[in-house]
Length: 569
Image 1 (cartoon, rainbow, N blue to C red):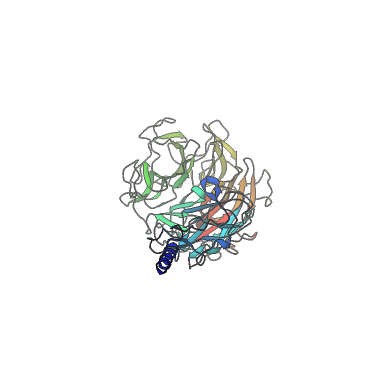
Image 2 (image 1 turned 45 degrees about the horizontal axis):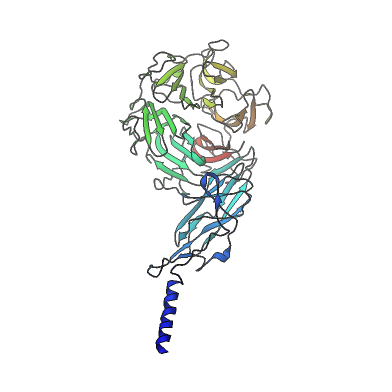
């Protein structure tokens, strides 16, 4: 009997050590099995059953009797309110995506984290017609699962400005942080005349500009994911020379030289195109640039143009592409990209300081001179089959759903050959220019009418360095700029419906100070200060995001700005 007792005891000990089968089962995801979501992301269930917790709110994995120390992990989740539409995708630590269906009130990421691991929960994609904000989304695991991340969704306020970030004062210095690593404290710093585009999932991209009124230039590339800025590449110092590499070949070492007043657009593949501007070439020489670049999301590609400054244009034959054709060095031009990914370029200012009115198209390999004059400072032509805008710089450009190119204002030559502030709205339909509104005489004063009321006589008046975007309904919007040729800063907001202008918001007088209100809170009294040459983006839902420019903060005189705003049409 004693031998039987010892054997039974040994069997019981082995049974406990092996876990009655040699493995333990990890607790199931709270709330049941995952389903399919938008874009292949998991759709979360509303469960969050605390009864599934083991070992002090942690999950364990026992690989068997020969395994080492037990791995302890903790989930990250929280609550959701106001989610009345599909499309929300949350993300943890920049890579763990979680699609959340309409009506859910709780969420939990599938990937659990070990103790002391950091977590950062952000909104990767907004739901249709809503805007969701994450609070308590940053922290570290402290021997318990995270359940207090809060996601609040609501309908964005209509026709209101919201101050999202940056300072209310001028000339803020950039905080770069670590290249490639986003952080809440990062900020591009005050600047104007930078290039911008909107990437996937409404990621906002910003390149270059000038931080000090044009005395120096930048070539830093930034991205904003909705919660934090990341310094992606480029220099944290000013006036960096370009690194061109081999034309047509992308490289991690390539980067455009520092510049401002360049042209930028995004193609159908999401690549960013950058042309010219005032800045620095491969030798570090400052002047007007004629280089055309493409950024594919990871690296820069020098596509066309010269790696030296102040190149003269080669027009060739109008309407005929040719390998030697080039618009030449210029800044303050405007650009479009059509549905076929042709890059269009109009006007600007050449190395001699003269205004241009030539229209160009780049088809991916060659430039074609399409319209306008090969000589500078041309007067506008009105009221005939030969209509064309006069030479100008600092205009505003839009493109509509039918690939019509739209152009407003700028500083240049009116129908009488007088250099002045311009207010005409032009449309190029692929073959000819059509004047849609405005006057053939420069320095035309604004006609505001009644705020919010559309009437045929309304007009923003002659101005330059304004910014514009197209909303989801195809309306064209215009904000700010200067009148009196850099004398009067403006903060008025206008909408053009294809026929008539409407004064929507802002002051009808110049040099207004900003009214910021509470950061993150929309209010009818909020208003950006008067400014020109701001940086703008349009989100997938048609909202405006605006950063910086040259103008007025909450007090003081005009200078470089770094405030960040949202406007929901």
